[in-house]
Amino acid sequence: MAAADIAHPTVRDEPLGRDKTRLVWLLLAAAFVAILNETTMGLAISHLIDDLSITAVSAQWLTTAFMLTMAVVIPITGFLLRRFTTRQVFITAMSLFSLGTFIAVLAPGFPVLVAARVVQASGTAIMMPLLMTTLMTIVPPHSRGRMMGRVSIVMSLAPAIGPSLSGFLLDTLGWRWIFGIVLPIALVALGMGIRWMVNLGETTHAPIDVLSVVLSAFGFGGIVYGLSQIGGAVDHGGSGAAEGSTLTLSISLVVGLVALVLFLWRQVRLQRDDDALLDLRVFRSRNFSVAIVHMTVLSAAFFGIITVLPLYMQRALGMEPGATGLAMLPGALLMGLAGPVIGRIYDARGTRVLMVPGSVIAVGTLWLYTTFTDTTPVWLVVVAQVLLSLGLAMSFTPLFTASLGSLPPRMYSYGSAVLSTVQQVAGAAGVAALITVMSSASANSLALGVDPSAAEAAGAHAAFVVAAFLALPLLVVAFLIRKPADAPQDPVPAR
Image (cartoon, rainbow, N blue to C red):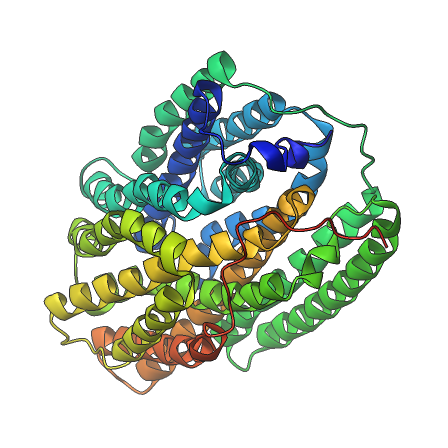
């Protein structure tokens, strides 16, 4: 029996036992470490640009490479969850994350640091679908909103602590300590997993299609790498280097799109025999498909904004890293405090009462960002970040729960993989696009003789405008997502 099939519908309303409860908290602890690592890095980008003498477009690879690696690895997790035990998957994921963090602590320069981020991402990519699949499997449908609300408490601690911790470390000890703080926490989580992790269900000898893995890597990798090359063309202007960047961009996007089409075609063929690396029959659920559209737009706008915002505060407003972290703290805390309430509302009243106002708040806040200049008061930036966090909190919990709850139990692992893959690829594209827009607009303003702070603000303004327009479809899609019935869905046909 596969890991995705570890619970039988007839026992879904029973309380969680001690082993399952401990399993959930172990997975949440691992997720906390991964998110802490990511939120500390966001604030460090500006610092690393100066310390490592790199451009903003190059520095964004510390984020893009992480998300791109996750996008490449996550489709394989459906196979991993079927082929290996829960214990084996968890230990492998945390070992990779710990190894990558250790390499980052000792990294002598930018290339090794990017490689360390790739190793970290390999572990994180395995962990997140494992967490979501396990929660959907062992938690009764009528309690999933409340559980997701509790999850948000734990997961919001990392965004709340991360920026402030990062700012303190950057101001006092240097960027290496960002990884030095994360490493012991990761090792403790790994040790706890080795001692207490239990297996759920039995493994199968599920085959892995190597060609699918290769096509997935070229597909998602080519598209995101192509997007990153837009920045290279912008930096070089009309020079010969720009022509080379444009050629690389075109080749990467073409290769990526062709490989992605071939990957999807192969999955359709393989799923006839239940051998797909990523089973696309999850899209037969209309609710799941609509939720994927919403997640794509939300992730592109969200990940792009949380990368641009710290750069704006530090380079346009002249804030220190520590102050930037403190400014982002209230919004992160709000997301955690709102989690239990949002979970209870979802269980009682469904998605629309949360996602519609949540989308309005998020989109409205993005448009508020477009009014920011180099003279915007810090308190207004803090208020806007709090509002955006509220809108996101009202969207993410019902979005994850309703989308995966629309699938039959045996499809949870594939649904988690699809959802996480889309989230990471869209996020990587959003980061690449907004950083490129910001860099281009800033460079143009500087060329016109604008003051450096005003030029940075102009670049951020351009990025905020793109994000605001990008998020507009959320106002429509939010109306279309429904809460699934509490009863488990019928199995998806094999053909």
